[in-house]
Amino acid sequence: MIFGETLRNRLNSLAAPVAGLTLAILPNVANAQEAAAPAAAATPAADAAVAASGYTPLGPDMIKGQPEPGALWFQDQYSPIGHDAIWMNDYILTPVMIVISVLVLVLLLVVILRFNKRANPTPSKTAHNTLLEVLWTLVPALILVGIALPSLNLLAEQYKSAPKDALTIKATGYQWYWGYTYADNGGFEVISNMMSEEEAKAKGFPEHLEADKRMVVPVGVPIRLQTIGADVIHSFAVPSLWFKIDAVPGRLNERVLQIDEPGIYYGQCSELCGARHGYMPIAVEAVPMEQFKAWVRTQPGGTIKGEEPAAAATPAATEAAPAPAA
Image (cartoon, rainbow, N blue to C red; front, side):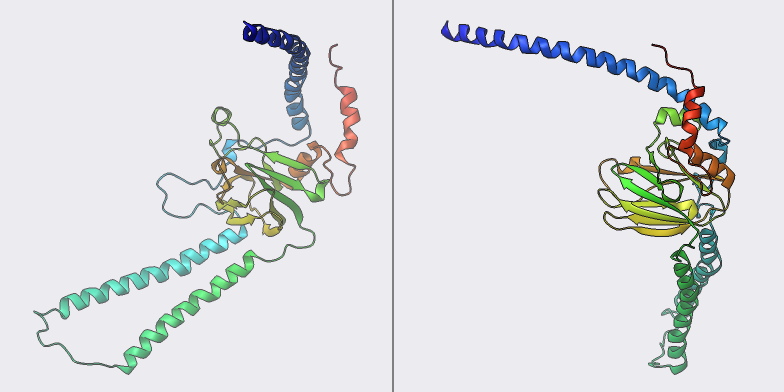
Protein backbone atom coordinates (compact mmCIF):
# COMPACT_ATOMS: atom_id res chain seq x y z
CA MET A 1 0.00 0.00 0.00
CA ILE A 2 2.80 2.40 0.89
CA PHE A 3 4.53 1.63 -2.45
CA GLY A 4 1.28 2.16 -4.40
CA GLU A 5 0.55 5.49 -2.74
CA THR A 6 4.12 6.67 -3.36
CA LEU A 7 3.94 5.76 -7.09
CA ARG A 8 0.51 7.46 -7.43
CA ASN A 9 1.81 10.65 -5.83
CA ARG A 10 4.83 10.77 -8.17
CA LEU A 11 2.68 10.24 -11.26
CA ASN A 12 0.36 13.03 -10.16
CA SER A 13 3.34 15.33 -9.66
CA LEU A 14 4.50 14.61 -13.25
CA ALA A 15 1.08 15.20 -14.82
CA ALA A 16 1.18 18.99 -14.47
CA PRO A 17 4.60 19.49 -16.18
CA VAL A 18 3.63 17.14 -19.04
CA ALA A 19 0.36 19.00 -19.63
CA GLY A 20 2.18 22.32 -19.64
CA LEU A 21 4.80 21.04 -22.09
CA THR A 22 2.07 19.78 -24.43
CA LEU A 23 0.30 23.11 -24.40
CA ALA A 24 3.59 24.86 -25.15
CA ILE A 25 4.42 22.59 -28.11
CA LEU A 26 1.05 22.64 -29.89
CA PRO A 27 1.09 26.37 -30.75
CA ASN A 28 4.66 26.02 -32.14
CA VAL A 29 3.59 23.13 -34.37
CA ALA A 30 0.66 25.15 -35.67
CA ASN A 31 2.91 28.13 -36.33
CA ALA A 32 5.41 25.92 -38.21
CA GLN A 33 2.65 24.55 -40.43
CA GLU A 34 1.40 28.07 -41.15
CA ALA A 35 4.94 29.19 -42.04
CA ALA A 36 5.43 26.23 -44.39
CA ALA A 37 2.47 27.22 -46.55
CA PRO A 38 3.97 30.56 -47.72
CA ALA A 39 7.30 28.81 -48.38
CA ALA A 40 5.60 26.27 -50.62
CA ALA A 41 3.63 29.02 -52.32
CA ALA A 42 6.87 30.91 -52.97
CA THR A 43 8.24 28.12 -55.20
CA PRO A 44 6.13 28.98 -58.28
CA ALA A 45 6.98 32.64 -57.74
CA ALA A 46 10.69 31.76 -57.67
CA ASP A 47 10.31 29.75 -60.87
CA ALA A 48 8.54 32.68 -62.51
CA ALA A 49 11.34 35.02 -61.43
CA VAL A 50 13.96 32.68 -62.95
CA ALA A 51 12.03 32.53 -66.22
CA ALA A 52 11.70 36.33 -66.32
CA SER A 53 15.46 36.74 -65.84
CA GLY A 54 16.23 35.34 -69.31
CA TYR A 55 17.64 32.05 -68.03
CA THR A 56 15.82 28.82 -68.86
CA PRO A 57 17.00 25.55 -67.27
CA LEU A 58 17.93 22.93 -69.86
CA GLY A 59 15.58 19.99 -70.32
CA PRO A 60 16.22 16.27 -70.78
CA ASP A 61 16.67 16.72 -74.55
CA MET A 62 20.00 18.47 -73.78
CA ILE A 63 21.57 15.57 -71.88
CA LYS A 64 24.88 14.66 -73.54
CA GLY A 65 27.65 12.12 -73.08
CA GLN A 66 25.51 9.56 -71.31
CA PRO A 67 26.58 5.88 -71.29
CA GLU A 68 24.52 3.65 -73.57
CA PRO A 69 23.38 0.08 -72.89
CA GLY A 70 25.70 -2.44 -74.54
CA ALA A 71 28.32 0.17 -75.46
CA LEU A 72 31.95 -1.05 -75.55
CA TRP A 73 33.88 2.21 -75.99
CA PHE A 74 34.33 5.47 -74.16
CA GLN A 75 31.47 7.90 -73.66
CA ASP A 76 31.29 10.77 -76.16
CA GLN A 77 33.58 13.59 -75.09
CA TYR A 78 32.68 17.29 -74.90
CA SER A 79 35.89 18.94 -73.70
CA PRO A 80 39.20 19.72 -75.45
CA ILE A 81 41.15 17.41 -73.14
CA GLY A 82 38.56 14.68 -73.74
CA HIS A 83 39.03 14.92 -77.51
CA ASP A 84 42.82 14.65 -77.09
CA ALA A 85 42.49 11.63 -74.80
CA ILE A 86 40.16 9.83 -77.23
CA TRP A 87 42.59 10.55 -80.09
CA MET A 88 45.42 9.08 -77.99
CA ASN A 89 43.38 5.97 -77.34
CA ASP A 90 42.02 5.51 -80.88
CA TYR A 91 45.14 6.27 -82.92
CA ILE A 92 48.04 5.23 -80.68
CA LEU A 93 47.14 2.83 -77.87
CA THR A 94 44.52 0.71 -79.66
CA PRO A 95 46.54 0.15 -82.89
CA VAL A 96 49.65 -0.75 -80.86
CA MET A 97 47.67 -3.24 -78.75
CA ILE A 98 46.09 -4.83 -81.83
CA VAL A 99 49.42 -5.16 -83.70
CA ILE A 100 51.20 -6.68 -80.69
CA SER A 101 48.34 -9.10 -79.98
CA VAL A 102 48.21 -10.26 -83.62
CA LEU A 103 52.01 -10.62 -83.78
CA VAL A 104 52.13 -12.73 -80.60
CA LEU A 105 49.25 -14.89 -81.87
CA VAL A 106 51.01 -15.48 -85.22
CA LEU A 107 54.27 -16.39 -83.48
CA LEU A 108 52.44 -18.87 -81.24
CA LEU A 109 50.79 -20.52 -84.24
CA VAL A 110 54.13 -20.74 -86.05
CA VAL A 111 55.76 -22.39 -83.05
CA ILE A 112 52.84 -24.82 -82.65
CA LEU A 113 52.76 -25.83 -86.31
CA ARG A 114 56.44 -25.79 -87.29
CA PHE A 115 58.24 -26.83 -84.13
CA ASN A 116 56.15 -29.65 -82.75
CA LYS A 117 57.63 -33.14 -82.32
CA ARG A 118 56.08 -34.50 -85.52
CA ALA A 119 57.13 -31.65 -87.83
CA ASN A 120 60.53 -31.10 -86.25
CA PRO A 121 61.80 -34.34 -84.69
CA THR A 122 65.35 -32.99 -84.32
CA PRO A 123 65.20 -29.65 -82.44
CA SER A 124 67.79 -26.96 -83.03
CA LYS A 125 70.43 -26.45 -80.36
CA THR A 126 71.00 -22.77 -81.14
CA ALA A 127 71.65 -20.89 -77.86
CA HIS A 128 72.31 -17.29 -79.03
CA ASN A 129 71.35 -14.98 -81.87
CA THR A 130 72.79 -11.48 -81.55
CA LEU A 131 70.52 -9.84 -84.15
CA LEU A 132 67.37 -11.39 -82.67
CA GLU A 133 68.33 -10.39 -79.12
CA VAL A 134 68.98 -6.78 -80.20
CA LEU A 135 65.66 -6.64 -82.03
CA TRP A 136 63.52 -8.01 -79.20
CA THR A 137 65.12 -5.51 -76.82
CA LEU A 138 65.19 -2.46 -79.07
CA VAL A 139 61.75 -2.75 -80.68
CA PRO A 140 59.77 -2.90 -77.38
CA ALA A 141 61.83 0.02 -76.07
CA LEU A 142 61.00 2.10 -79.15
CA ILE A 143 57.31 1.19 -78.80
CA LEU A 144 57.32 2.37 -75.19
CA VAL A 145 59.01 5.64 -76.16
CA GLY A 146 56.43 6.14 -78.92
CA ILE A 147 53.63 5.70 -76.37
CA ALA A 148 55.34 7.74 -73.63
CA LEU A 149 55.80 10.97 -75.61
CA PRO A 150 52.12 11.69 -76.43
CA SER A 151 51.09 10.21 -73.07
CA LEU A 152 53.28 12.64 -71.11
CA ASN A 153 52.05 15.50 -73.28
CA LEU A 154 48.43 14.54 -72.51
CA LEU A 155 49.20 14.26 -68.80
CA ALA A 156 50.85 17.69 -68.74
CA GLU A 157 47.93 19.20 -70.67
CA GLN A 158 45.47 17.96 -68.05
CA TYR A 159 47.25 19.87 -65.29
CA LYS A 160 48.02 23.17 -66.99
CA SER A 161 47.35 26.18 -64.79
CA ALA A 162 44.19 28.11 -65.51
CA PRO A 163 44.58 31.55 -67.15
CA LYS A 164 44.33 34.57 -64.86
CA ASP A 165 40.91 35.57 -66.21
CA ALA A 166 39.41 32.09 -65.83
CA LEU A 167 36.10 31.80 -63.98
CA THR A 168 36.66 30.30 -60.52
CA ILE A 169 34.21 27.79 -59.05
CA LYS A 170 34.86 25.80 -55.87
CA ALA A 171 33.19 22.39 -55.51
CA THR A 172 32.92 21.30 -51.88
CA GLY A 173 32.14 17.68 -51.11
CA TYR A 174 29.88 17.10 -48.12
CA GLN A 175 28.37 13.90 -46.75
CA TRP A 176 26.45 13.40 -49.01
CA TYR A 177 25.92 16.29 -51.38
CA TRP A 178 27.87 18.96 -53.27
CA GLY A 179 28.21 22.69 -52.79
CA TYR A 180 29.31 25.00 -55.62
CA THR A 181 30.75 28.39 -54.65
CA TYR A 182 31.06 31.07 -57.35
CA ALA A 183 33.95 33.14 -56.02
CA ASP A 184 34.03 35.54 -59.00
CA ASN A 185 30.28 36.20 -58.91
CA GLY A 186 29.65 37.33 -55.36
CA GLY A 187 30.73 34.21 -53.49
CA PHE A 188 27.27 32.61 -53.28
CA GLU A 189 27.04 28.84 -52.81
CA VAL A 190 24.63 26.50 -54.56
CA ILE A 191 23.78 23.37 -52.54
CA SER A 192 23.11 20.40 -54.81
CA ASN A 193 21.32 17.26 -53.64
CA MET A 194 20.14 14.25 -55.61
CA MET A 195 16.66 14.75 -57.05
CA SER A 196 14.14 12.21 -55.80
CA GLU A 197 13.49 9.25 -58.09
CA GLU A 198 9.83 10.15 -58.49
CA GLU A 199 10.52 13.75 -59.47
CA ALA A 200 13.35 12.80 -61.86
CA LYS A 201 11.19 10.20 -63.56
CA ALA A 202 8.27 12.61 -63.87
CA LYS A 203 10.51 15.26 -65.48
CA GLY A 204 12.24 12.81 -67.83
CA PHE A 205 15.68 12.96 -66.20
CA PRO A 206 17.86 9.95 -65.29
CA GLU A 207 17.27 8.69 -61.76
CA HIS A 208 20.17 8.87 -59.29
CA LEU A 209 21.99 11.30 -61.63
CA GLU A 210 19.79 14.40 -61.76
CA ALA A 211 20.23 17.00 -59.00
CA ASP A 212 17.77 19.48 -57.56
CA LYS A 213 20.28 22.27 -58.36
CA ARG A 214 22.97 21.95 -61.00
CA MET A 215 26.42 23.47 -61.32
CA VAL A 216 25.74 26.04 -64.06
CA VAL A 217 28.79 27.06 -66.11
CA PRO A 218 29.43 29.01 -69.33
CA VAL A 219 30.36 27.21 -72.55
CA GLY A 220 33.66 27.60 -74.36
CA VAL A 221 35.64 29.39 -71.64
CA PRO A 222 38.24 27.99 -69.23
CA ILE A 223 36.97 27.40 -65.71
CA ARG A 224 39.23 27.09 -62.70
CA LEU A 225 37.46 24.31 -60.82
CA GLN A 226 38.72 23.93 -57.27
CA THR A 227 37.76 21.02 -55.04
CA ILE A 228 37.88 20.46 -51.30
CA GLY A 229 36.26 18.04 -48.87
CA ALA A 230 34.31 19.34 -45.89
CA ASP A 231 34.44 16.07 -43.93
CA VAL A 232 36.00 13.08 -45.74
CA ILE A 233 37.66 12.52 -49.12
CA HIS A 234 35.31 12.83 -52.10
CA SER A 235 36.06 12.82 -55.83
CA PHE A 236 34.51 15.08 -58.47
CA ALA A 237 34.22 13.02 -61.66
CA VAL A 238 32.38 13.68 -64.93
CA PRO A 239 33.36 11.00 -67.51
CA SER A 240 31.98 12.76 -70.61
CA LEU A 241 34.18 15.79 -69.83
CA TRP A 242 37.28 13.65 -69.10
CA PHE A 243 37.38 15.26 -65.67
CA LYS A 244 38.21 13.73 -62.31
CA ILE A 245 39.84 15.32 -59.27
CA ASP A 246 39.79 14.44 -55.58
CA ALA A 247 38.21 16.68 -52.95
CA VAL A 248 40.39 16.33 -49.85
CA PRO A 249 39.67 18.00 -46.47
CA GLY A 250 42.16 20.77 -45.72
CA ARG A 251 43.60 20.75 -49.24
CA LEU A 252 42.50 22.78 -52.26
CA ASN A 253 42.96 20.98 -55.58
CA GLU A 254 42.25 22.57 -58.93
CA ARG A 255 42.06 21.76 -62.64
CA VAL A 256 40.90 23.55 -65.76
CA LEU A 257 37.46 22.59 -67.03
CA GLN A 258 36.26 23.71 -70.46
CA ILE A 259 33.09 22.48 -72.15
CA ASP A 260 32.56 22.63 -75.92
CA GLU A 261 28.78 22.52 -76.26
CA PRO A 262 25.72 23.55 -74.25
CA GLY A 263 24.18 20.58 -72.47
CA ILE A 264 23.73 18.64 -69.24
CA TYR A 265 26.63 16.42 -68.22
CA TYR A 266 26.37 13.94 -65.37
CA GLY A 267 28.94 12.50 -63.01
CA GLN A 268 29.15 11.07 -59.52
CA CYS A 269 31.38 11.08 -56.48
CA SER A 270 34.08 8.53 -57.30
CA GLU A 271 35.63 8.06 -53.86
CA LEU A 272 33.95 5.84 -51.27
CA CYS A 273 32.82 8.42 -48.71
CA GLY A 274 30.26 6.74 -46.48
CA ALA A 275 26.79 5.23 -46.34
CA ARG A 276 25.21 7.44 -49.04
CA HIS A 277 28.23 7.62 -51.33
CA GLY A 278 26.12 6.41 -54.27
CA TYR A 279 23.59 9.20 -53.80
CA MET A 280 25.62 12.36 -54.44
CA PRO A 281 25.48 12.90 -58.21
CA ILE A 282 27.10 15.73 -60.13
CA ALA A 283 24.96 17.60 -62.67
CA VAL A 284 26.83 20.17 -64.77
CA GLU A 285 24.72 22.47 -66.93
CA ALA A 286 26.71 24.29 -69.62
CA VAL A 287 24.99 27.30 -71.21
CA PRO A 288 26.04 30.28 -73.38
CA MET A 289 27.65 33.17 -71.51
CA GLU A 290 24.58 35.41 -71.64
CA GLN A 291 22.45 32.62 -70.18
CA PHE A 292 25.05 32.07 -67.47
CA LYS A 293 25.00 35.77 -66.54
CA ALA A 294 21.20 35.70 -66.43
CA TRP A 295 21.36 32.69 -64.09
CA VAL A 296 23.89 34.44 -61.82
CA ARG A 297 21.52 37.40 -61.50
CA THR A 298 18.84 35.07 -60.10
CA GLN A 299 21.09 33.89 -57.28
CA PRO A 300 21.06 35.61 -53.86
CA GLY A 301 24.13 37.84 -53.81
CA GLY A 302 25.06 36.94 -57.39
CA THR A 303 27.07 39.63 -59.19
CA ILE A 304 28.54 40.18 -62.65
CA LYS A 305 31.73 42.18 -63.04
CA GLY A 306 30.86 45.67 -64.17
CA GLU A 307 27.20 45.37 -63.18
CA GLU A 308 25.17 46.22 -60.12
CA PRO A 309 24.81 43.35 -57.61
CA ALA A 310 21.77 41.14 -58.14
CA ALA A 311 20.66 41.95 -54.59
CA ALA A 312 20.00 45.53 -55.69
CA ALA A 313 17.00 44.30 -57.69
CA THR A 314 15.45 42.68 -54.61
CA PRO A 315 13.59 45.77 -53.25
CA ALA A 316 11.93 46.38 -56.61
CA ALA A 317 10.86 42.76 -56.80
CA THR A 318 9.54 42.99 -53.24
CA GLU A 319 7.48 46.07 -54.05
CA ALA A 320 5.99 44.40 -57.12
CA ALA A 321 5.04 41.26 -55.22
CA PRO A 322 1.60 41.26 -53.55
CA ALA A 323 1.59 41.46 -49.78
CA PRO A 324 0.78 38.16 -48.04
CA ALA A 325 -2.70 37.86 -46.60
CA ALA A 326 -2.96 38.48 -42.87
